[in-house]
Length: 325
Image: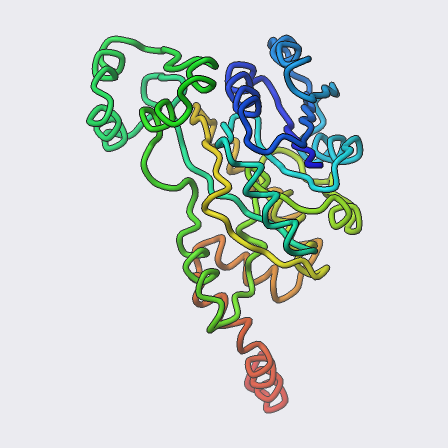
């Protein structure tokens, strides 16, 4: 059985569509665990709508953060496979089927699914001009909404249930989410060259792993607070515990884009990055730091790891000759 772990905080309207997408999954042996991290909106009422329709359980905690919330979900799960899906991500109908298909073929596996974007709630200034034009070209009814409405819900749960593919096609924003093109290029070419950073691709927005593997490494590190790095840390430890990573462009979910406080988000990320560096302080973490700050590209980072023995030997030699101060 699959256990879908969904932490949530004050995103009831988005969670409604996310949970609806699990009503129409082609793979049916699963449970959904929602961990409410201190919401003060109608999140619980939304979850209650799905009781009797989904195998769903709800846990509430005071606001303690993503790591603790996900650990609660893992510790209360009954499935042997954990699938992480965020509260604002609509799962494709074959989402769980695709994740499951890899785990029945191979043990010690982390499956990273494809993350796309969709507009479920229109708000002013939420899209770039290019994105606005792209959506209006394929869905002309949006011209009126984008022109005259400041905010509008674009589709409802019944639209997903009755016309999933058509609804997604009308409101999907072109292009994959995130900045993983550079990582994907090296990852998919790893047959000819080892890629040392598959753990960087793993985010709990769309990821699956055997529950036993997660428990073996102690789950999420609960010292991470706010946004970012807790899932990178988890994947880092899974990688060095022997897990293999695979990317699936068929295990798809769709991020319902929404307003984000970027300044707060980046501050939290920087704080968590500093903790990650203090925690590990090795060649992998240092090289990752250089990449994350834009000081080297991923080709350069991978080159360093490919040649670390030669680089270390040269530094040691230069040190003995008094050429490094």
